[in-house]
Each structure stands twice: as C-alpha cells, then as structure tokens.
Length: 357
Image 1 (spheres, rainbow, N blue to C red):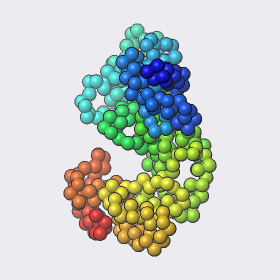
Image 2 (tube, rainbow, N blue to C red; image 1 turned 60 degrees about the vertical axis):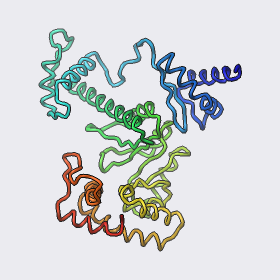
Image 3 (spheres, rainbow, N blue to C red; image 1 turned 120 degrees about the vertical axis):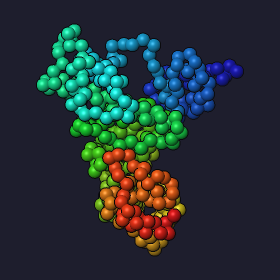
Image 4 (cartoon, one colour; image 1 turned 135 degrees about the horizontal axis):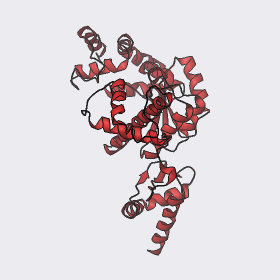
C-alpha cells in the first residue's frame, strides 16, 4: 500500500512538473504514469477538474488554472477592441439561423450596430485598416475554435486518429501554421496526421516547417501529395531528413499509390480503399512483396477508376457516385456547393467498378 502511494505521488509530481511526458524521452516516468493511470485520472479530475490526456506516445495533464492571470488571454487578440469585436460577432451569430448563411458585408454592417460606439475608446470604422485587420483576427480565431470543437467531437465519437489539413482564406506565415498544429495537438488525445495538400488548400509547407510540426508529440504521420516514380523517391528522401523517428510518411492520390509506396512511404492514404478494401490491400501486399507482375495487373484493373478521377474533377465526386451505385449512400450525398455526377458520368463510373467490389 505504501509503495503504491509513493508511486502515485511520484507519477503525479512528474505530471505536474512537465508539460508532456514523452514515452521516447521519459520512459521511466511514462510507464509509471501508465501503471497508475486510472488513479491519477480520477484524482486530478475530482480534485482539480483537470483531464489527463492519454496517447500511445505521451501523457499530458491539462492544467487549467483556478484564477485568470494577465497572460491567459486569447493569443490572437491584440487589443480591447479585438475582444469587443469578438463579443459583437458572437452576438451577431447568436441571432442567425443554425444553418444560416450570410455575406461578409452583412456581418460588417451589423457589427456597426452591435459595437458600443458611444463608450468606445476608438469608434468602429471599416475604412480603417486597423479595424479590418482586427476583424480578420477575430474570424480566424473563431475558425480555429471550430476546428478544436471538431477535434473533440471526433475523439468523443471514437476516432482513432485525426487527419488535419491547413485551411485559411488569408495567406499564412510559418509561425501561424505551427501555432495552429501546436494548439490542436494540445487538445488531441489521439494521433494527428499532418495533411500537406497545397493544390487544394493553397498553403505551401516547407520541409523545415513540416519537420518542426512533426516533432510535436501528437503528430504520428504526414500525408503527402503523390508524385510519379522518379520524383517520388527524391521527395520522400528529402522530406525524411527533416522528420523525427517514428513519424510515418503516407502517399495520397490513389493513382500514385504504387510510386509512393515503392519510394518508401509506409502508408497509403487511400480514397478507394474504403469502398474496395480487398483490391487495395492486395495492391499494398504485392508492392511490399516486390511482386511486379501482380502490381501491374492490379493497377490495370484499377485504371478505369483512376481515369474517372481524372475526367470528373478528382476522386470525391467519383467515389460518392460509386458508393451510391453500390447502395451505400444517397445519390445526392455531397456537401454543397458540390453536385452529384450526371447520368452519363455515373454510367462511366459504374463500368469502372466491374470486378472491384
């Protein structure tokens, strides 16, 4: 009994004194916390209201302060006006329908009425660059909060990992991108995959920045764009030099799966794998075993589907149509503004599915 109490005390002290307890860096403390995980979680939750975040690679005690301090504000906010503007935006949103849409101009006009102009040190004026930048900070903050809520919802729903791209209306600095992933990783209790997708997101991540992000404790993998065979090997080797051990590289773009896996990617982040797991798994196994003849045969079988991806604007519309053809979802299942494929396109997709299901 006394030995257990001493072990719990040491484990609690380690959690209190360290921001993270990394398995790779503090193995003794990590396994001590793991041994007393249930007692520690119950104690800190009951006494302090602090959750214990659990991950295969680390433990983290989320130390929520009892009293606010000067440094505990919202990092993105730069003035009292920013906070006031945030409250006004929230008041505006509260008056909207749950699924309602509005123009930025409507929001700006409404904020002139919400903002306490008479008592303000500086009156709200959209002709001022300072106020326009303040609104951008507020909107970016709200978007980030939405991401964190989605992270929490995914974890509560039982997600095993999070795939996270970097999306922004405004061009981003490297420090802003890093801070975003750092914030998400602080709230994640499951592994996080960094999604590098410049074609869609219009955000370019340097190898050095990806290396910094990959060093965050929750980052387990990076999903990279697919490339043809000669370039894929060079790309994987170049990026690998910046990554810590244990962070995997995964290829995206199903038509480039073979090139990516043969170039050294450990993972294929497949679009078609969810609908056609057998042939997708067979392709991975053939690549791993170096069976060139089988790899060629499977790629030939999948080629009509790849051509549909190219012909109809990417994989999402095609896979949605394929799922509908197989009776797995409604024909009109895409979120707007995306529309389902037309009849002729659906016939092409149906023909491409022969022998895949």
